[in-house]
Length: 92
Image 1 (cartoon, one colour):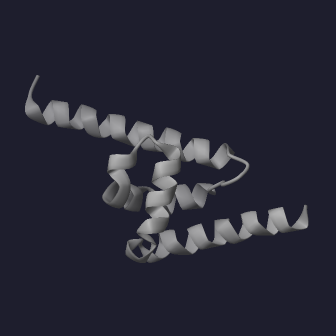
Image 2 (image 1 turned 90 degrees about the vertical axis):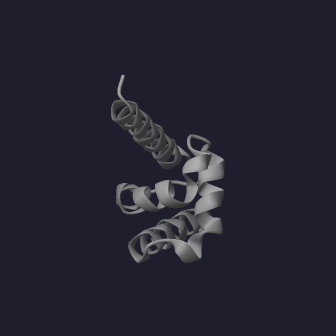
């Protein structure tokens, strides 16, 4: 096996783990990300929090810890999703 092939396999595994992590977050009643947040934040999560994958609570905490370093698009959709979740909780 060549080094580049191994690197490609590792990256594919990380992408799959991250996708599963975000999918699980999306199905969590306490903290759900929209498909838009998944799309806008995947790069930021890999860049800032790859060491936390696949630990869902750790990824979430890491993303909030690094909020100032998030891309503008990710920060916007995360803020929107959090506000929507808070609104749902407040109306119950």
